[in-house]
Length: 63
Image (cartoon, rainbow, N blue to C red; front, side, top):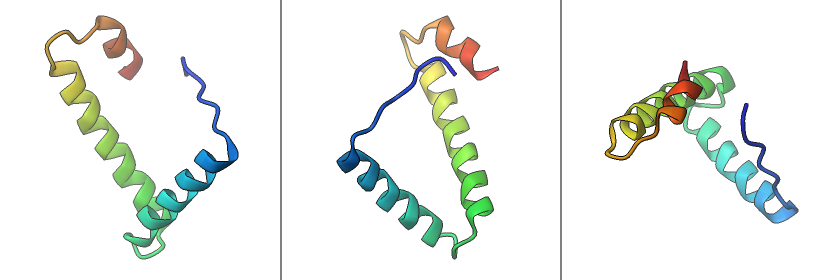
């Protein structure tokens, strides 16, 4: 991992609320939600890499 993000208490609470909603959309199945998130992140990474001006550095972080 190349970048660590630090969250304050308010940001952490907001992130937790979003995560809870995401898991709830998967009927409480955390593993199913995690797998979907991995797939969604992969699709997003492909779009970012295909965008004009995408750096080769970001491509190296994927593989």
